[in-house]
Image 1 (tube, rainbow, N blue to C red):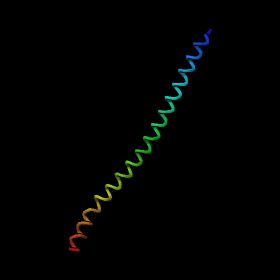
Image 2: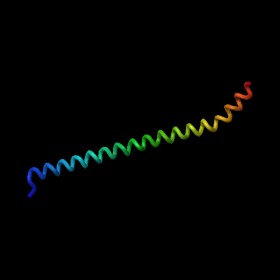
Image 3: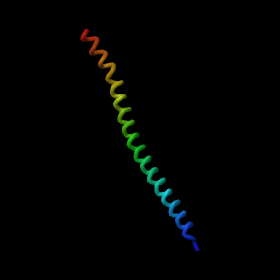
Image 4: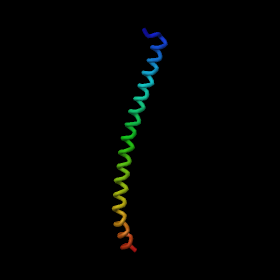
Amino acid sequence: MLTSLQIKFLILIFMVFLITIGFAILIWRQTIVVEKKALAAKQRQKECQQNQPELKKIEKTNE
């Protein structure tokens, strides 16, 4: 049979395991958020790069 100390130790291990799983889920969710923001920034960057030649043409015609 398990002693009181062994039961407390198993409870401690279980609590550490739950906390670790909680942090893993938190990190996973934040990774998804950062991934979405990075994708949006990359799309904005592409749009800016595509619009840049048009802006240069407009500036030359205004001079």
